[in-house]
Length: 190
Image (cartoon, rainbow, N blue to C red; front, side, top):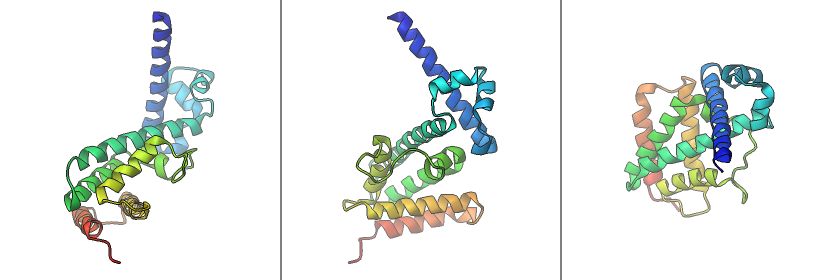
């Protein structure tokens, strides 16, 4: 029993090292620079060991990084939301979301821009993805079919990409967040 637990711990540690090395390399040089050869060299294991943890290679590694990113982003947004409601809630969650995208560009890219084997907006969508969507829906009070939440998410995603590309004035972020909150906190027009 103790031997099995020790073996599982070693497996978990190797997996963590692989993911950390991939994330670090992607943050530094982009996902194109992340290769199984580089990861194996970085962590000091052979490529077969790496593939034993991630049989799909780089694609499965990116998926694992993305899924961890969804958990982290959801946790940050949930913490920002707390018990706030209305404009304050929207502003707090928007800042948490945009800060995450800015501070973790490679993870964010894996989550939302690169092809990964994760299905969005389907009945079989992963629970971690659903939780992220749910916190955004709760933030804006969307009790409808999710369309308003998709618009809120789309606005946050667009802002994050434009900010990263230097297409928006950094000093105006607070004004953008305030304007976004004003629009999503307003009662829907009918």
